[in-house]
Image (cartoon, rainbow, N blue to C red; front, top):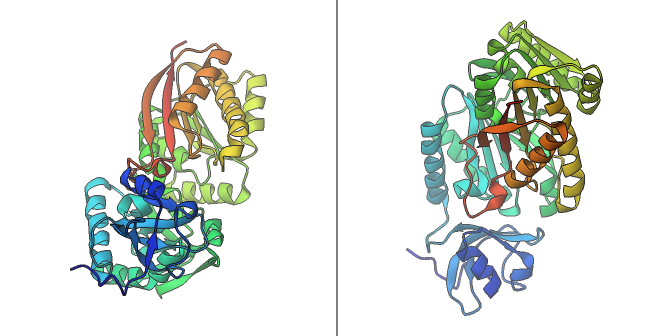
Length: 393
């Protein structure tokens, strides 16, 4: 049953905003929203300039993303609506998530729950509400998580800076039950300690889980793992290798890696606190060679203006890595920068290979794990690239 139109909050969007929604993009920017009509954080009826219904959406009076579409259908957005979306998300994860109890349950727009993130770590959930409306609906989402999954605890990790764009405070705290300082979950048969309140993202980089396993398939011999963080790649590939040297410049990351190493009793990995750029240069000068090199740097391009500098950074690390690889060796190179497309990353690596006088073939082109789905018509939802190359001479 449709809402009584005269009683529900609404916004009017321009013809350009209508076209954006019809193209499959779920955001309408402030420049395409007519002034007035709704309070901050409301769930609104979206109309065009002729009064035609276009959908229901989250509304923000601060962010440049003023409208985040929820549905094109003329239906009530209530507890039942959110419960249905959560069930759909959970059904999909049961299909695609294997051999782990640490995964993403809700991935924002790609699960038609815009600006809402829910990660599961065993019996505990971590939630992020990254817009004004998501924040207002937080208690409903938490109640549904408790009702549907019976977790021991739910934590909010609402410390991302993007919340400041919504005039929302940054905060971390327990919303339900109790959440320990650390939990242990398995990924690809390897145990990892997660700090849900203080670790990266919601505790760890769950989006690389499937790429860790793919890397294990190719890794061999002497391995150099750069930007190793808490040892996700290094400890996963170790079983197939003679030795892995893992490098990260953050002391906390190295400490966490060594703890994970001890937890799994893995003896053929050495963790080194150092700057990856310096290590790659050092080993080039020493004529050191490796059978496999893994590059998983932080986002070099935070925005469009930083793309040129990011290109130079990606070019340097891939060029130096290719120089260090033996014939028949493998380069596993990643970018989590949305602004660096797969096509651009392929171009960067191709230029690096030419400069290094190496011929390489593409073994695999990968992206984020399947529990971080990509909404085809929203390129922003595809951010992680993982390319695997084989050196043939």
